[in-house]
Length: 249
Image (cartoon, helix red, strand yellow):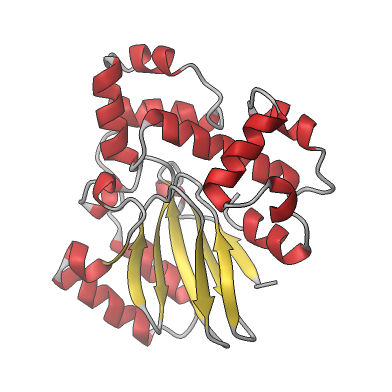
């Protein structure tokens, strides 16, 4: 189990940032599971520098050396593009260095992070680099907020109408803003909700499927297989898998 901590974002950024976080390894770790959660993270480690982890459509696994400390800032679904100045649709399933995105400003941030003495100082440096106030939210951001608040259990046609967007236009705008289409985002958020419910204790999968907005347990199993390559029973079959699945829930 990797020690993992979440930290509250600056109050002014709370609408845009879900949390800051840090994790540290004692021993070397292979195949640490990071499931999709609909978010984009800006992460830093001394070994790999500062990188942006785009919205994921499937679980990724990472190897960490002993004594590795990683910190990050997790943007809420649809909000990262307001700060990164690059469309999230260009980052889906990618890890991109901040130098590629911000140029000289990214290099300066990485240099400052390399000189920081603690995880908390790194988090403070990352958040201080972001604008104190993001640009005003557009209708598509408000629509993505509504989808997120419902954990993906929402009528997308209704959401599109509320945003005064046609179905095709909403699909395109949601993909640009979040890195996922509306249907993909709903599926990832339902999966995330189910994972969070399962992480609370001994899972009852039929009840979790109903509470997370799935048609039935078979529907939930299909999504778990697509996002993780495993059944939910396998994902939560031991403590290590449980910790990995709940890390970003």
